[in-house]
Image (cartoon, rainbow, N blue to C red; front, side, top):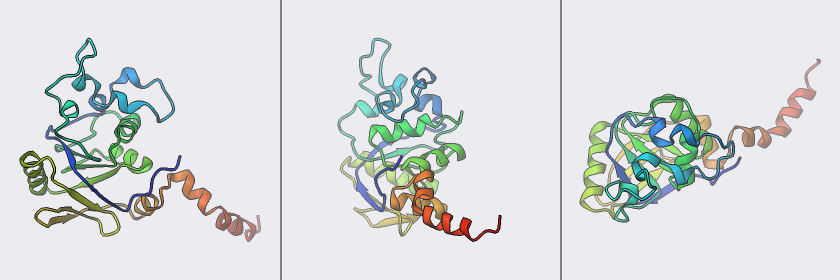
Length: 198
């Protein structure tokens, strides 16, 4: 399933300074019955967002209109636990295009890259600068530049580089998932196959 191309994202951010956020907290297991990617955003952080009677918890950041944006800033070790890809689906479906943390669980990171959510891993020191800036001013803008592989606090110009697999980087810039990529090079594959003697 193709998604929007990702090149340069400028946005405010939603701060979630909690460490060891696992995939069951991101999307509880009882919401994993659907097989399509749509609709999971409604239940992103469900048990943290809502009381048992489905009323919003006023103290949870996603229920606080002060903080908005397409960038979620999480604490260290974001996306740990089970390998459910639905966690990445929920993050994307809610409207986030990037997650920033000082460490990501590998499988969650891969699942995000497969669907158009950019996981930006920064140093613990830079993460603290981001949290401090956003809490001081919720209108703080971050710029994530995928071609240059940098994240910048626009108010101060402070920036850091981040790593990304070159294949996934190319896919994100083109809005491709793995199937889209293969479809895009279908002609090359057919040409290569035609040259084989078997």
